[in-house]
Image 1 (cartoon, rainbow, N blue to C red):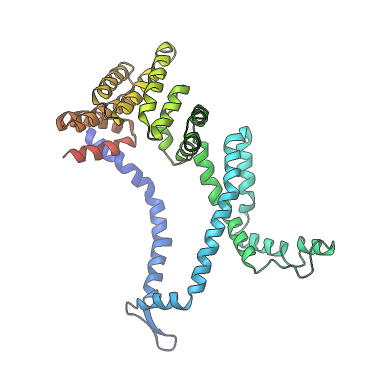
Image 2 (image 1 turned 120 degrees about the horizontal axis):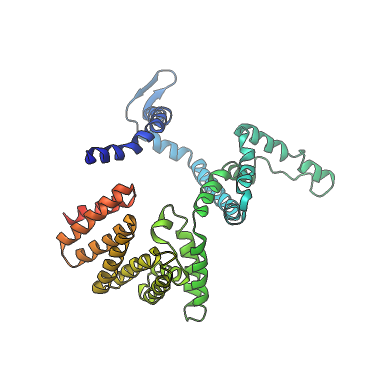
Length: 360
């Protein structure tokens, strides 16, 4: 019964995707396939066309319209860069400083795009025309020469493309920035301040803020790899991501001691610091230290009935056993963790399932 329930649960996402996939299939894949079919035909308007696998059509198109293809790629690349440069500061400001008015600012960002694409393009054509409301007025005021011209130039085309696709750049950036835990940004800043007096301060200070901040914009990585606790734990996480687990060990021990003193308020953070400590020991190859910390954390999380965190500790124990060549013990730990992640519906289940498959 449980197996049947799990199978149904795994099939539910595909069922939810079915209407969208059907829509894409009918209105995107089928027309695209028909165009591909037509592109391989040969013949003429007078005598008709027949499907002959005419791959040479592509070579002729590239040869005859090479300059147009190159120009399209150049315009698209420049428009993408402009859209990124304009939209990133806007998305950052709304995510971090928009406060209670975030929804209003997002609405204002999208408001012009409730109007048809064609109407917006025609409106900009009228605004930027030689005698339009903008340049016509400036010419009458003798602020621009009468010969000044913008329409039908590369500048106008690139600017128009960047403008029309600005929300498609700004909204995904906003969503990613909004998910960033502010405590991790502060931890990265603390780490960079801590490195000011080190010989490689410039290099590591930049990486502390830059790599931690930018990496967290990637979906789902924040929850899995950047759970910052207190200040020393946050700096330790940053050191782990920067590839220096040895420096993280002392900070994690300090964080664990701090959290132990706060166990009456929140008993979970001490065990979480223990999991991170086990991971740091594992990265430097200290298997006994990693095992001791992971066992302690797993036992503590079991007492607290925290299935997810206990499964994380069991994954570490499975990796430790795997490195020691004990496949049976690794399999036991991974299977127990897999059951927990599957029960919780966590995406970590697939990762553990892949590790289990690697043992076979």
